Structure formats: structure tokens, C-alpha cells
Length: 253
Image (cartoon, rainbow, N blue to C red; front, side, top):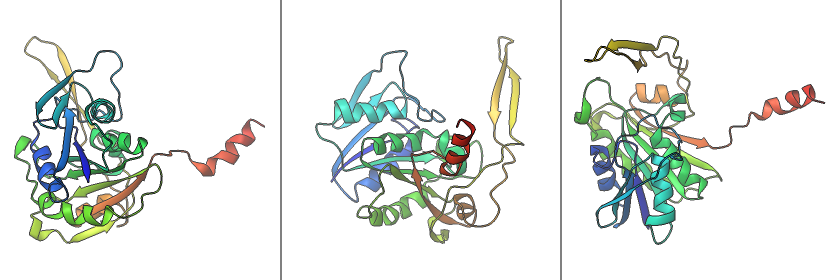
């Protein structure tokens, strides 16, 4: 089985090393193509206004001077001699839960793989304490990823769907299990914009996402993580709201 590994934290991110160790439990035919620098929050963006540069770091290990989407496109169209059987994106440093998946470069790399018709899985390690940098513990992902991925390898994926996995911020021994849940909803009404002044006297602004309210009940990825479970969520690329089609069509009849 040929596996493409990518992420949005960059080619030197600790989570990519974790992902490689996870993938080697399934295959030795691994290819790594990741952004040269961190691209968190890049979403499904594509670089169109400047050239994208490719750098080789070793056998079957490359970086791309662009977004996670660029990395997957370069892997599939330029780097790899044959298409992979599986794309794994991650392991992201931080959660990709609820509607945050629309911002996520990690999820978007898997989306690009899905658009190419390749089975794609995004993985993220949730953490609680801010300011941890590269010291985020990946123990839950390291211990649980293979047992989550294994059943997915022979599970039929519906066309234009992918799977988003998040690991709770707990020691591996304290993870309660795996829940298959729907995508939750974040309320960013209490999010913040932090203002400061740089050393040259210019104002800057930094987005903060504090005080996030979660979806009521226990049926979404948000609550699964809060309760100490690995969350597994199938996502679809078709964003059409079918229930509104007839009503909108009536407005233009």
C-alpha cells in the first residue's frame, strides 16, 4: 500500500514524525510532501499569484513553498510516480473540531485527496494548555491512531467524503475509546481580537478564539473530545443545503 503523508504544520513539525511512525505500521511505501512552513488556518487555499517551489529533503521526502492543498497537488501531479492508495494528513498540533474544519489546512489537504478520488483521512491532536509550542504531547495519537485507521482501510467511503479524526488531550491510558459522531458547531460570539503595538510603533491585531461555546448534548465531535474519546467524523464535500432548493427555486419561478 502506497501512502502519501502531508500536513499543515510544515515539513519539520513533530506531528509529521508522529504521522510517519503511525503510517509505518501499515506500509513502508511512504511518500512525504508537506508545506515548507506552517500553514495553519490556510483552509483549502491554492497558490496562484506566485510560483510554488519544490525541495527534496531525502528519499521520498519533499517540501513545497505553499499551502497544504499545493502540497497534495504537487505530490499527485509531479512528485509521485503512481497515485497513492491512501492519504494521511496530520498529525495536527491542535484540534480540528466543529466548523473549524473550514479553516483547517489539515482537513483541506485530505479534501484535496478526496477530490482526486483517493481515500483520505485527517488527524489532529487536541491540547489544553496554550503556549506549548512544539511540546504538545502526541501520546493519545501515537497509541490510538493505528486502531482507528485499521478498520477504515477496508470500509467503503462514499464518493467525495473523507474522515476527520481528533485525539483527546489525555494520556493514552486515559482515553475512553472511540466515538463516531457528527460535526459540531462553535459559537465564536466571545472570540477576541487582541491589539498590540510592534517595536516600530505600528498597531497589529491577533485573532483569539476564547470562550467557545459547544453544541448542546453529546452527539458531536466537540463533546466526544471533552468526554475523553477519540472522535471520528465523516465529512462530505457537497455543501448544498438540499432542503432549501425548492424554496429558493420558487422565489425565481
